[in-house]
Amino acid sequence: MSLSSNGESCDVIQDLLAIFNKYESRPDTAASVICLSATCVCLVLCLLLNIYIAANIFYKKKFQIRYFTTFLLLLHVQLVYLALSIFSQLLELTPQCFPETQLTRDIASVSGPLTRAGLGVFGCLVGALTIERFLASTTAGPILRSFLNTLTLLLALAGPISVVTCFILIKFEVFEAVMELDTEFWFGVEICVYVIFPLLLLTVFGTVNCCKVSMSSRMLPTKQVQAIKINIAVTVSTNIAIFLFLVQESLNLWQRQLLERQDDPGFHDEVQSALVTVALAEHVTTTLVSLMVSLVSLLYCAISSSCCHECCCPSINELEQIRYEQVDTKDVL
View (cartoon, rainbow, N blue to C red):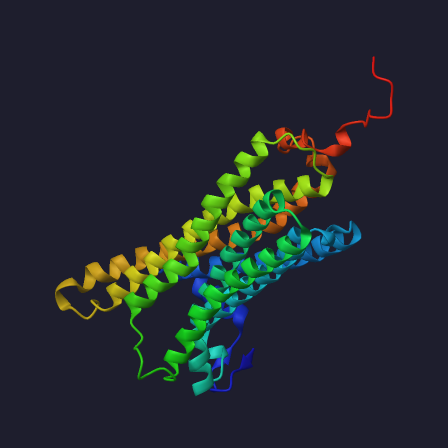
């Protein structure tokens, strides 16, 4: 047992257990505890897996391929998103464990936008990885490929970072004379940058990449084959994660609209019942988003392992150079 700076008792584990024990009367708050616990497990698991992945990339010298160096950046963003999500949930569930100061209130007000921006950067980076696969098979010359990949990466990072930076500047009244914070407006901006833009990249370039692989007869090195497999798997899982994120943000917007009507005496009971249901659905969706984001590390480990090599994408395995023996210097009957 400990005391926070505002004098209230603070024991995170006990406080969370007390909240969870109210699952019969408040299933939404119990679901929030489960969501926090699942996200913590995902963070620890991803941290361990990412250490292995980084060692594997350097040991196997995969860093010589641009895809894998960008993939390492994606894994860092994955950990940042999970950490921000945990911090945001702790601020909501155990506010008594944080000092009651203006700085804490300011941090709490931007923790949600920062978490959403983290997922937006994650989705845009996966889009950049998909474009890298497209450029690797269509662009001649390493210098031009490197330039285009760097430009794509910078643009992918610039979008979400610009949105959250503008939000913070307006929040702290730096741009007060230019525009005001409007919930519906920023919801639309975030959906465009964090959802529609990554989905567009993943859909267009992901489809093109799959078609090129299925129609190609050019032999590829083993590392390139692994990059193709990983990119297909990561693209599918990220598509699901972004869709779930869209559902989550729609539920958040619905919840804010219900909170504006909870003081209406004619609809108080209906609004409270709806708030519990919407909050429960939102926490379940947040848990699923964390699981899908964490799945990226598991997919890399599974696809890179020798035991899954033969059963994973056998049609792509046919393009692997190592499967074929060079016969140009041998006698052919």
